[in-house]
Amino acid sequence: MNPPLHGIKVLELGQLIAGPFAARLLGEFGAEVIKIEPPGSGDPLRSWRKLHQGTSLWWYVQARNKQSVAVDLRRPEGQEIVRRLAREADIVVENFRPGTMEKWGLGYEALSEHNPGLIMVRVSGFGQTGPRRDQPGFGAIGESMGGLRYVTGYPDRPPVRLNLSIGDSVAGLHAVIGAMMALRHRETNGGKGQVADVALYESVFNLMECTLPEYAMYGEIRERTGSNLTGIVPSNTYASRDGVNIIIGGNGDGIFRRLMAAIGRRDIGEDPRYATNDGRAGAADFIDGAIGDWCATHDAEAVMAVLKAADVPHGKIYSIADIVEDEQYRAREMILSAQLADGAELKMPGIVPKLSATPGVIRSLGGILGADTRQVLLGNGFSDEEIARLAEQGVIHVAADAVTADPEAGVDA
Image (cartoon, rainbow, N blue to C red; front, side, top):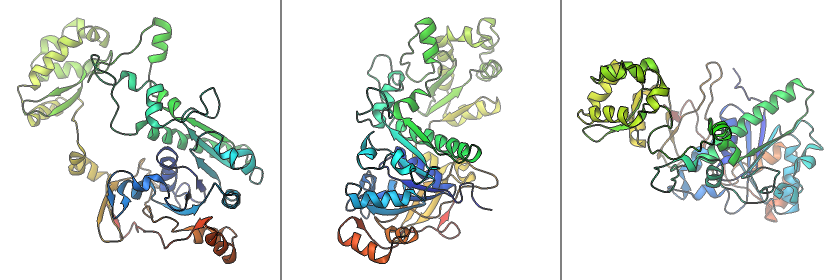
C-alpha cells in the first residue's frame, strides 16, 4: 500500500531545525523531499554537535528520506532553478527571515503564479507580519517570548531552558499541521494553494495551557515552581532512598486515594479536605512531604513496584542511556539501527505517529552535499548541458550518490 503522502512533492529551502524537521516528518510518510542547500558548506546542521567522519550524527536523522540538491540561492541562476522546481511541487517549506524569499524573487506570489495549487509553509521567529517580523528569531527566543521560559525552573533562581531546541521542534510540528490542513483544503475546495504562516513564539504560546485566561480574569501570573505542576496536586518529582528521581502523578481523585493507601497514608487519602484537587492544591507542601518521606525510605525498584500495583501513574526520569535499554521503546520500534557507508552503526529515533495501515518508512539517511543534484534536475526538465554549465559556474554542486538505508536490509528495530 502506498504511504499517505505518496505523490506529494516537497521543496525544502530551510536550514537547521524548524523547517527541516517539518520536512523530515513529511518525508517519513511518503512525500518526496528535495532539500536545497548552499554549495560549499551545505546546511549548517551538517557540522553541529557530535560528528562522525566530518558529518553530524544529527544530520543523518534530520535529513533522512531527503534528496540533497546544492544550489546557490543568492545567484539569479540558482533562483531560477528553484522557480522551475517549484512548478512541480506541492509544498515549499522555508524558514528564512521574512522578506528573504521575496528579495530572491521566490515569494509566494511569484512561485504560485505558475503553480496556483502550491502550498508554502513559512516558519520564522515572529511570523510574516507585525512589528517584529524583521527581527531574527531562534527557538530560544520563541521559548522566551512564548512564555515557556518564564515558568521553567525554581522560584529563587533565574528561568532555565530545556536542554533541547524545543521551540524549533514545536514550530516544526505546527508547520506539518498547517501543511496537512492546506493540502486538505486544496483537495476539497478547488485546488487552490495557500500560505501557512508559523511563528516560533506563537507555536510555544499555543502550549501555555490556561495561563492567559487566568491572568485576564484573575490577574494570576504563573510563576516558577520547580519540579511540581502549578495547582495540580500531587504531581511532582520524588527521590528514592538510592537516589533515583521518580515522577508520580497522583492528581486524579481516585488515583490520589489509591496512592495514599499504597504508601500507608490512608488518613490523608480519606480526608474530605483533600478529596478534590481544589483542596489538595492548598496543601501541596504537606502532601508532597508525605509522599517524599515515603519514597526516601525505599529504593526505586520497590517504590515503582508499589506504585504499579496501586495503578498510580509514575516513571523514572530517563537519561538517553535508560531510553536505549527500555523494553517499551524496543517493543514500539522507537530505537532503530542503520549502517553508515563505513560500516559504523547509527542508532536513531523511530517514526511518530504510528499508522496501522500506512506506517512511516526510512528510505535513506541524510547523505553528502549535492548527492542528488544531477538526478533531481534531470527529472525536472534540465538537460545535461544545462547541468554541466551551472556546475561549472558554481551555481550548483553535483556529488556522488546519497547514503541509502534500505528498510529491509539496513534499518532494524
